[in-house]
Length: 464
Ligand SMILES: Cc1cc2nc3c(=O)[nH]c(=O)nc-3n(C[C@H](O)[C@H](O)[C@H](O)COP(=O)(O)OP(=O)(O)OC[C@H]3O[C@@H](n4cnc5c(N)ncnc54)[C@H](O)[C@@H]3O)c2cc1C
Image (cartoon, rainbow, N blue to C red; front, side, top):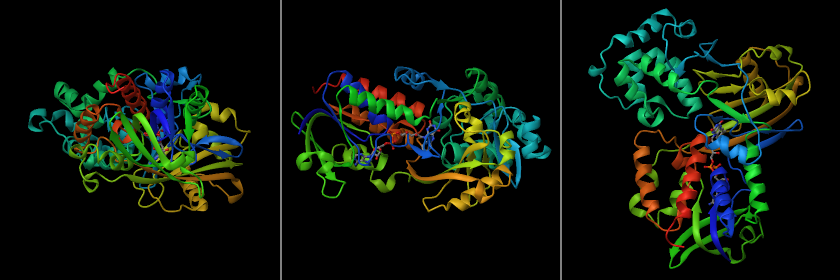
């Protein structure tokens, strides 16, 4: 089988590059190992409604996702004004209004004191008295916060946000990669809290996240529909096992997924392509690329491990206390032990979702940092505890459980430099593009921008 472009991996990154290539008039074959495209943009039917089970929002800084949504004919929506809460030592409080990565901009504000207590808040405020020069330029997030604001800010605020929202322990996080500009603002303003205020004041007004009417998974659905309309060939159940660079292009090998099937419908399991786009998860991409870029890719054991999670989505009915959104848009757990790490009250967060539910029905999703089976009854108990409401078994109208595996965050210490080297090596190989969350950073805003940049680079690739 011969094509102009073989795209390996049908997550949002692969779909974006495939779309750019097909619009440029090239024949495109997209190979996806699972039984559906979209990757972490996914939905489950919950009580008759397709509900996001992977990504459910995106950072609204930057314009890449907004522009893509408009282009695809989808409608961008804002979350409700209900903020998120924090549960610590069994006590729930709204998350401080002014912060970056959980670092408070106003350590003596009431919402910070309610979580930390007055003593720890005053210690955090003392950051303003510590000369910047004695600290120097701190690379490690945990160290920066502990030294300037004290251990309570680290444990009660920064850790829950880091681990739950960014999938990153503060000890492993590189400040410059995670919050670009923070160290610079610290040097200019002289304190960490002032630096946070400086970053916040330069951010656009309004909510920092946005969603899509109908769910974020619709971005993948719309991209796939476009690809089909413009004549791209989408194959699911096709796992790529190797790519070889040869004169005039690439040879891509595919294995069977479906029993008795022929490699996603690819006769002989071999494809010759002028260009290849690697858009899988990190470990798979590195295994495919290592024979070609051996000098630029360290052995797999030297890469930080990814993480597993499980999302349990619940439709609940007849729990009247939920109408008042007792935990706003949701709650982060500061001390989860091995239990639920976060809950999103989706129907309180997204007005479009609430408007599609019958009166008295609510949707919540409970998150766990585990690949183990999470019984639905356990998720219902955790939802009740996190929301501080009674949820009888009869209230559960429907449920879905989804397991995920994600790559190590790009802001993991040392990783962004390693990935920059790798990107340089990729750019030196004609007719090769590499995209996806492992190299771009996990947030959709980063993935979409990097995929579009990679598509533009490929368009000017010298080989063909
Ligand atoms: C539970 C969860 C919640 C999230 N929430 C948010 C959020 O709210 N906001 C936000 O901005 N981001 C969020 N993200 C992150 C964001 O969704 C992802 O970073 C992004 O969707 C990744 O897209 P991708 O194309 O890089 O990778 P993926 O979506 O992982 O796609 C990679 C694809 O490659 C396929 N593949 C792998 N190996 C092969 C092979 N050998 N051959 C063929 N195909 C292969 C896989 O099956 C997969 O479909 C969330 C992620 C998860 C898991």
